[in-house]
Length: 152
Image (tube, rainbow, N blue to C red; front, top):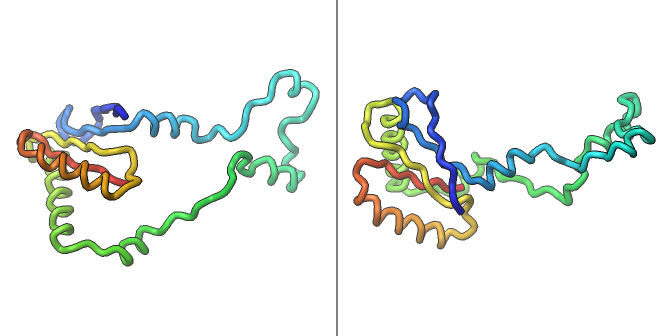
């Protein structure tokens, strides 16, 4: 999937330093986030009351509920994940070094460009590791870039 490259002119770093990659699908999904049901046509609006009266609590509750949602999957709290899935000291050092380097670039103390790349989401840990290995093999080719693989 292609990504949209956005240069943030309001970044504290000098212009052109901070780059963000956004998936077009993510942009499309967030643009349609609040569309819950089709709009009524003009004829039905003239003959019926589309919006319930706020005093009718039962109708108002039914009106504002998610109309097209089949179910919900609860999200795991980040604190619980950190407790259950621990990282090795080497992984913690890698994360800390990358965050420090990214902060230096964004603050303008490092001349490299920060590039955040990666798949839209990770469904397979094996595929994510394969992507990371390919990316790591290429990183030495671009010493003027700090390449960070995003994952969620």
